[in-house]
Amino acid sequence: MTREIKIFDTTLRDGEQSPGATMNIAEKLSIARQLARMGVDIIEAGFAYSSSGDFDAIRKIALEVEGPTICSLARAKPDDIDSAWQALKGGANIRIHTFISTSDIHLKHQFRMTRDEALKRAVDMVERAKGYVDDVEFSPMDATRSEVNYLCEVLEATIEAGAQTVNIPDTVGYTTPKEFGDLISAIRKQVANIDQAVISVHCHNDLGLAVANSLAAVYAGAGQVECTINGIGERAGNAALEEIVMSLRTRKDIFKADTGIVTEEITKASRLVSKITGMQVQPNKAIVGMNAFAHESGIHQDGLLKEKLTYEIMMPESVGAGKTSIVLGKHSGRHAFLTRLEALGYHPNEAELNKAFERLKKLADQKKEIFDEDLEALISEEMARPIERYRLVSIHSESGSELKPTATIELEIDGKGHKKTGHGDGVVDAAYKTIASITETKSVLREYLVKGITGGTDALGDVSVVLEEGGKRVKGHGADTDIIIASVHAYLNALNKLAASSAKGPEDQKVGLI
Image (cartoon, rainbow, N blue to C red):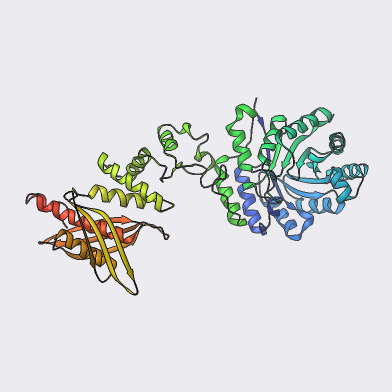
């Protein structure tokens, strides 16, 4: 049987405690509405007593957001409880969440209270909250560093006082999965009335274990997880909602549990929170990172193209992330390259594919990201490339404010090597004049056009030229991150077309001419 785990989202409260993540009322309301669309069970909208802004945000969300239970945090103090009620009253589904520490470290150094005093305060404030609302949650702060018998005594007393949810916080991110799972099991065994409350967990990520600890608690019987979008929160953050939800959904066979979250809304929520808080999601972040469903390895790409289950344990569509991304780069294989080309409408033969693939590898060493426009430039040049009479072997150029533009060109003409150095008004002019000298061609350059195919300083440059010779005009194309090399490729591409057209019969000479 699959248990349903409640998702308690504290993005608007604990998440806002991330340095620099402060949100205004309109922004909080926007996120709360997205959380409601996503099917979150409880939204902790803020800490009413802490500021007038939090109070107003909680009040607005409680009155305007339908679906989830709306909650306010409150210290175990009368004024906090009263303030939480004033902010929440009138809402359809509301909860007061009150807390006090139970660890000796906190009681001695921060609260300066005895265990008995903390126990009495916890019970009194749960009862006070219960006088306002039916739904009360109690948290023994720093529970994972509390003495277990005392912790269980406090939990039993607060449940008796009316708490319907008891939350076990790993406040400083100190515990480990096995240890935390054992603690939840101990609570289930030692707290006599635990069946009258839902066990919740709230884990911080100081050791990078927040999600693992939360899942261990679910495995041990917890029924609610407190988490945040993108894992934002105090210090190193909280358990990430998206990771909790998709772990349970993907591994129901292990946890025998799931949530009511509409997972297709996860990516929207992640991007909204990131935009509002200014806290960017790391590219390799699980579930919502830019690279979460991106594959560059040729082995992985080949497997995915044959069957997605080979390298994807969940579908990107299931979290609203669009489609799997096949990233072409230095590690990609021919299968992925050909698949992308075919999607763009190109169907090269094997020779054309092989040549374009070699150029892709070189290009991937030169620039970080390969765009579809880059691929189109590569393949269109190869597919339009005539039988090469002239082939570039190497180019060396020099230019500067005090130097005469010079180009040294080495070509193969019909398989034989030729090399010359020439000068011009610029490096491109020097290269073209040198090529004309080597090839002994009399073509005239009618057009020369340069454009950047993609943005950035590492953009692939596309050069188009129009050459005229003997009454024939042809267009040549070249592409490279080095604009001089692209210019030389374009010029040679046009010369090869002229040479090919001269070798054809009168009817065939129309092919490739403009």
